[in-house]
Length: 398
Ligand code: ADP
Image (cartoon, rainbow, N blue to C red; front, side, top):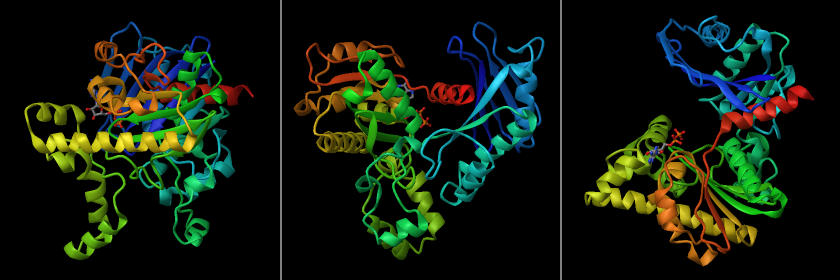
């Protein structure tokens, strides 16, 4: 069966087609600048990439173009569109939906009802779904939610110590994000160790532009660093991560800031960019650090400090740690960051062969633990789309 995976943003739409008989990606690409002008790309293994400027007014136009390209006699990878057995849609926020599901009217209405707490990702994901329903009628549409991985966290992890009515009435709680990535790498790490997830205490670090850490005890995620929104937890490229909440009200009063201006500071002007004054990109901050820039050095130290603090807290929560996983842009590619973190975690039993770590090519799997280390430390490339395809395939078959 072929599965189409869609990840729709406000003006872009990423797609991948998986052949589930082999697990291979047979086509993938991006529709970009939707509603502006329109660009489409298509990549197929072993063939030249294709790129074209095509007017894309709406998400419907983008999906229609993708389907047309997939069956194009020259460029396509499918003989007929009916080869697509199901479509998997990435939803960053599933609210209280506890697992991936086939999207019927009830689920769609629920997802539409929670766009208020998911204003950036919710509306475009629903548009992508609408377009697929129109253009691929009768084919199962599956929703895979980044938040559902956290649905079994204990209430002590997800209820904030605010008046309880805000949880009950406004659903103010920790939802967690990047769940599809944490779920994928935890599954892969267990496969590599040839153990069942139920036997392992694992901490997975998704470190990219947005970063989060999850504690997975026996296959159940028991805590995660992102919260009501992806703002909580670690400092990120441009996000502050956790700060004293009173700073927000204090600054708003002192500088007469509107809520939107305050949001902008917290989401787009903070993090690595805010402290270093150089860039949100870890690579650029590290170059400046090497050249002796003190604020770049401080920005990286704040990042390491917070990562180590959360890993330590999660090991305490789980009463131990068997596996530590690094993934995403920084986690998969930056051996220096991994090295800096691991050398501060010796007390937990994290011991890595730094030569092996530093010589692993970017983006490749690596077990960097020294033989006999109490904790297995892995660098493991994430693949959220494959996880979405797997869930979609399972639900479509059922
Ligand atoms: P997003 O959260 O937008 O998906 P990514 O997972 O792509 O982000 O991560 C982006 C971060 O990864 C940036 O800080 C960038 O510096 C870092 N990164 C990407 N590639 C490399 C690399 N080859 N070496 C070091 N860091 C990298």
